[in-house]
Amino acid sequence: MVAPSAGSKIQIQSYKHNGNLHRVWESSIVLKGTEQIVIGANDKTQVVESDGRTWITREPAICYFHSKHWFNVIGMLRDDGIYYYCNISSPFVYEGNSIKYIDYDLDLKIYPDMTYDLLDEDEYEEHREQMNYPGVLDRILYNNIEDLQRWVQQRKGPFSPGFVDQWYERFLTYRW
Image (cartoon, rainbow, N blue to C red; front, side, top):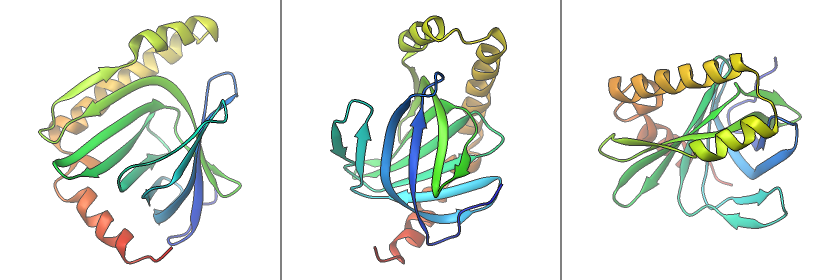
């Protein structure tokens, strides 16, 4: 797999299990790009929903994608601290100047004090039945939720102290 280069602009594309496009973040800048990890950033970027509605992100965000883990992490810099939104998803692929992944509805929302909530279990159950997720996928996703919770508890990877701030400082060196 080819990796995006630092400083390049990419789209982030989220799909559903049935292959339908779910959501697109129009423009993010790559801060680090390898075949295994992509770290990107955006601020006030346009997001297009599958039904055509659009909205603009409210704050700077650092995005962490890993080719081996079934989740991605978005660290949002707000006035009262860093909030994380973690999508339980397929590992990413980089293709056609875009990061692509399958969103499996389940999300972990993490607050500045590192407490968290698991969100959208009802939506996951509905889509699991509609799209006939295989049993093995269910186990993979819930195992990755446990891995993600351990990362939060251990302050690992994108949850380590200073991670989001360090990458945000790098983001500020780029001029769009």
